[in-house]
Figure 1 (spheres, rainbow, N blue to C red):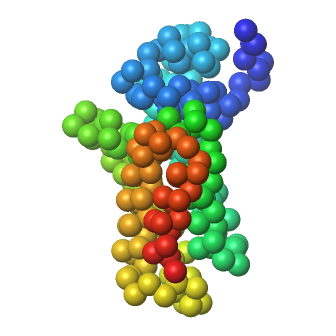
Figure 2 (spheres, one colour):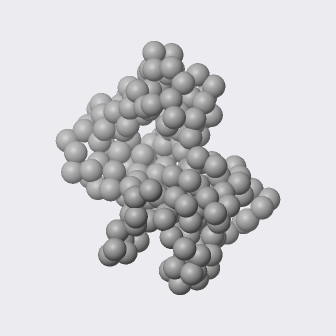
Figure 3 (cartoon, rainbow, N blue to C red):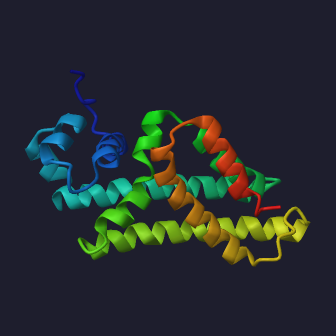
Length: 193
């Protein structure tokens, strides 16, 4: 087993924990699962994450939020943000079967935490709503340039994309094959024309 880097890298450790949570979910992930993946002892774990497993999970989903915000920055600098969003959805089809089976950690959290932990559910919902606003901004850019002719509002189309995102993260578990997913994604993206 490879030892943890001598200089503690919290982002690295969070990434390792995130992968465990992503695959197993919050409730099914044990402290032993996390310690093994992060290559930490329980003393180091509780010194670093005083709030325990819940604090670690919150930081792990915030790390995904950071990745979404990096995509938002990419969109802001893009000549065609709608094309970037389409590319983002199209890339789902070519992900590995393992990625298909994991789905989206944020969408998974919304489903898992409903009626169990309102705080974690609200944090995950807030992240998806931020992504929805990002989509709305990009869609409005497309409408302003004439790239999108659909008469529905940018906000409604953005909410549709979030619905597509949430649905695809279940459907790709059912049908983890690129060709079928590509056709399905193209059909769903046809509203952005």
